[in-house]
Length: 219
Image (cartoon, rainbow, N blue to C red):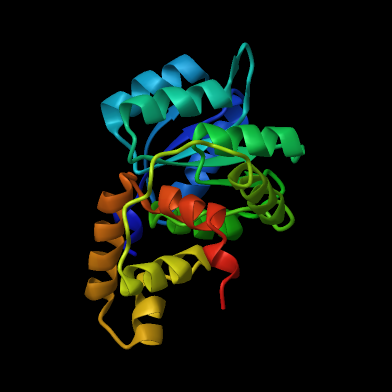
């Protein structure tokens, strides 16, 4: 992915940390279009600048990152939000993901790890600090096991289901194409058809759906 094509907003209430992260990402070729110190400013500025990825702290002083996540996605549902927080508490991770965050890193992540995470988030893949992904998967599976009374899910074709299973395992469109011996454009077409059928907005939501259905564990 072309780094310059990835627009980023950094949200953190500590100005030195906020500007330092923005500078590190800019130095590595990303287009940091804005920064914000709190939830209200984050929603307002994101609405104006429409970043592809928002790098979000959870502790924003009087406001919370969860409120900012919900506010931004309420206006820009296709924006991807990657939490970058000092907290690795399970409750904080789950609250952020349930609010719509695509992934979650703790602030011990190095600059190159952060760059890779932002680029992967921009492509719609969930990114987590090692040890946190299992927590999130377990919670989704627990929630999926609870009675929901949800309406019937539209039927997917065999190939759409196969592609969805590989998406859930974290494979890129190119990797899926190589596995299924089709072009990556064909894979993306299946992904878009599946999103439309399931009435989902982006690949992150698709991955969550697949995890809830246990497709990531399929052979």
